[in-house]
Amino acid sequence: MSALRQSPAWRALAAHREQFAGTQVRDLFTADPDRASRLSLEFGELFLDYSRNLVTPDTMRLLAALADQARVADWIRRMFSGEPINNTENQPALHVALRSDRAQFPDRGDVLPKVREVLSRMRVIVDQVRSGALRGSTGKPVRSVVNLGIGGSDLGPRMLTRALRTYCVGGPQVRFVANADPSDLEAVLHELDPETTLFIVASKSFTTEETLDNARRARAWLAESLPRDAAPQAHFFAVTAYVDRAREFGIAIERILPIWEWVGGRFSVWSAVGLPVALAMGMDRFDALLKGARDMDAHFHTAPLERNMPVIMALLSVWYTNFWDAQTQAVIPYSEDLRELPAYLQQLEMESNGKHVDRDGREVDYPTAPVVWGASGTSSQHSFHQLLHQGTHLVPVDFIIAAAGTGTDVLAANAIAQSAALMSGRSVHGAPHRTHPGNRPSSVIVLERLSPEALGQLLSLYEHKVFVEGVIWNINSFDQWGVELGKTLARELLPAFRGEASPDSDPATRALIERIRRLRAN
Image (cartoon, rainbow, N blue to C red):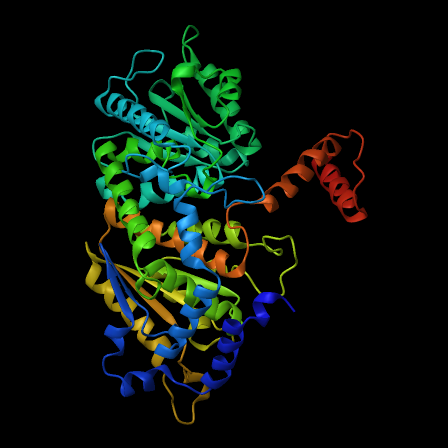
């Protein structure tokens, strides 16, 4: 048994969980009329109500003791000090530097001059594109921007551009292409004018096959569609940590924006990876997004653990994952503009904490990283909410509501009703099929409005929540070795599809390749 599971704080929580059996959250509200105010927290433009969770004040004290045992406060200090907490790659995790307003950060190896230089370059590019000063190879101003990226170079910018679309006025139309399937790019190019289209190739390594394949197709489309004397390279920018590779592709040095090894892809939307967001809504609003994240960083860095919003959310996740056998976590934003948020949080959580060994390389004997999933309400009420209410799985839910905006009364009423129904349930005598057991946990996060600053706070909240989970589970939340294996095998298999020497693969793999080749030959 691992040291974590044998630890005093873990054992105390396990015993507390045994005592919790039969407790009904609705009865806890009866016993404590102030429960809603006691188990809620406000910071900036966010309000977190976690009163409908399967917790008591004793639960929260025991979870706080687990955080103390894991030295969460010290790990927060270490991250903000720039220590190499990504131990498998010997790197600091300095995504907070991308939005910092300090004079120097971190104290050792200050990176802020580089960060601010890139933000200044982004402002120039954004102003040139939005004013019409930046033109394509035929002299026409840019009207459309296509971001070519995948994973962290796609999910964050895609989500934010959709979420903040009401702020995207006066700028170019921004599209996103991620899939290696050529139809993804073809569907976008079909609607665009090559003379007024700009491509951003976003790849930290500039070796990502899906992204580079799409970039080559985009370049071929430009070469075929533009006048013979026009230069396709005038329609490209790049965002990468490997400038030389982007130059070899044919992108001019002044059109290459750097990112750095100390920024993980899933934490990179605050960097030049966010260029399409800034182009869509303007640099001032992008700065507001950074400010929101920076404010949450300060709260996370300084607030006591028992009143620290990311810490509380992390502790609730650990409580359900490790002591209630919850294998998944649903995120349901009651806003169609936030429909991409669950996918963004999937990568953030599952790529960060989907690990089976601890920091010392030992196999863990406890679950890490719930499966994150969800969709926007109210549409999701007509698909998977049936399982949430009457299914056999315990699924903690985060409901997210924007208080101000069009149609928010209907959305807020539905979100709050879902949370209340999950907690209270309903019994129908003689009709078990109509009975809702209730006592199913949920939290509600209320944003004052769907603004750049509020979204910055929300995303930073979830980033830090994931980090605290990793600290408690004693895993490294900042590497992602599991991303590479499948891609490596795919590269090795490609020659076999062309009839070349078959790799040393298993019989099932060889049979599937042969079947696909036969089907293509018919």
